[in-house]
Length: 381
Image (tube, rainbow, N blue to C red; front, side, top):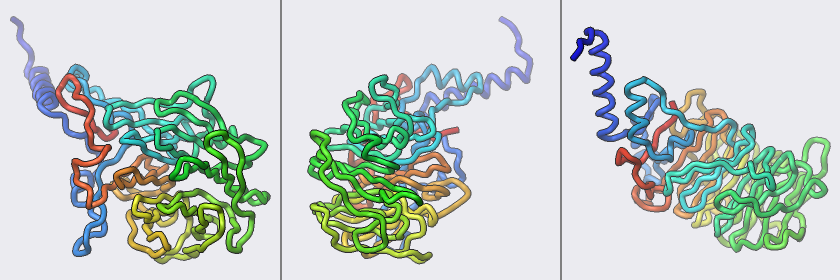
């Protein structure tokens, strides 16, 4: 037996109490001032009928991987902070059955956050298929991942677990890649070539997804119907319509499945329904269209015909749910959840449709518990 002085004893008792609290049930680590009010974030706010609810934010690996009992005890006794491999400069997001893929252009990887499996891993360090500047992303029905590599000027294809499969296109075809999109049938690949001030290659390249052959191109540089000025992204509607973010013309153009121009919506301005700096675009199973605007710090939701329904988010210098400084990517998964990327705050916000139960869908299937009997969902420190 030996004595411990009062200060040291008090410190150890406090540490032990903290350890017991951690072992009793690991709550999410929250650093944001508004995090505790997250359950109140409903869009649109009352008295309007709720359409979406803020659900979670992913900053890094600790948000999906289970916590370990021994590691939690060590942190409690030593004061060591929980480590999490986070995002450096996220750009785009795509999702397949609860596995969230995020391109990180600065870290040169696609980072995979698998909520159902409680797993985090990186894609792009395969010697056969290395990534240099991953930008736009999409997945097909099997979960194969398509990555637009801006530096290599090619589309890199991996299986769901990150094994390199093949590449499509190359520097002889592409000039300045921005995004890649798989059509609903999984037959065609749409690749956005953003062009530039001194370039005339402002177009969408269309490929056969099976053999990689180049089928045709959409558009040319200009301001008229079917012409583009700095196109940013493509989304495919429920009926096969092709939606293109025509960034420099501040509009979304719509084509039929064969590439024939149909209509457009949007114009430059500061009002709802206008665009100032449109980035990526997505569609949901009902055919609604979602457009990110980096200047507004939000995404706007339109009908398939371009009528504005609502918007979510606000521009802010302070991070928090639904707050953005430099939003870029957007995706809607199989269940209708909306994923929004912000480059400045290095995060992905997730919004659940009000019609979907909180415990429904792929994203809420929890991983097998860790040694402490709890699955982890911690925000970054």
